[in-house]
Length: 376
Image 1: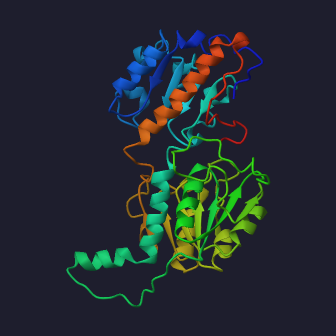
Image 2 (image 1 turned 120 degrees about the vertical axis):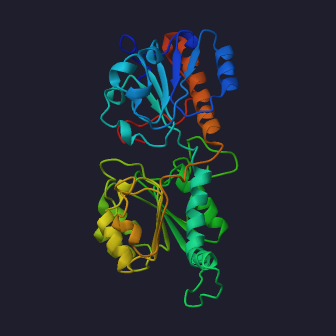
Image 3 (image 1 turned 90 degrees about the horizontal axis):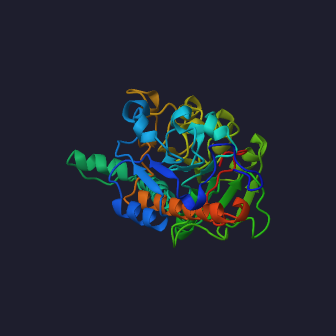
């Protein structure tokens, strides 16, 4: 993130009280005109340009030079051409991760502040995880198939299991993982948490990201056991903890790419763990996953992300045993964009205070500012 002790390069850095800033919002409609009016009234001279575009377009095909004129702040998921956002000093990502930006010149500039929308996704994604877990345990899909055929009989050869006493392992105990833990504990499950860095004190276990009220694990009290480490050996130790359900919720980095391969599925085969991946498809070796499913090494898998993504028609993963796949939709909720703007509103306020403070210091109150070393 940007240093508060050194002035940013020419063309970068917040203006006095945001009075000369223009924020370009690259999010799909509907445009929240009331929010725009409120923010522009709060910061006189501040302008918001909410481009009414479909999401995930070819940006070069829909954005014009006029759209970018004077832009100093950006809210987006997809990267924009570096030369178009050369004067941007703040990027509010509408995603929890920044993997699409890793080699982008603006991301590599330490004077540009990046913040994520971490915390906007946990309620809906955790419900997706638990929903697929219950669906598999109670065999909803086979019964739905019977119903579609106009038939009805008890599938007694498919034993039902319930959750009390089972163990959920969360690989990446961030905002999403914390809400998964909350729901898992409500079902009577034990929770084991894995983080890259050690969480040895109550203070270190607190969540400092945006949190929807009444959700998550703000104080870090839910896990019965914590694990940490950067090596594959430490991850393998975590995977060997007799996990009934493994939730993959890591950020995608060079270190976490391919974190689940053949060796890891061998470890999980001891308990025939059910795997739910709601992070990125590249965390998992797809060929190894297909073999683990078809050979019965794991009970099943629920995948909202895949590698490749989207899966090509007829891909062998579609035909694997005991797998449920959705096309990267677990994040969806009618409340998503109001949560993104809540984060952005807080960060804009902090940037305004920073620009007005003596020496441009003490912005105070920014949230979800990215660690550009570890990329989360």
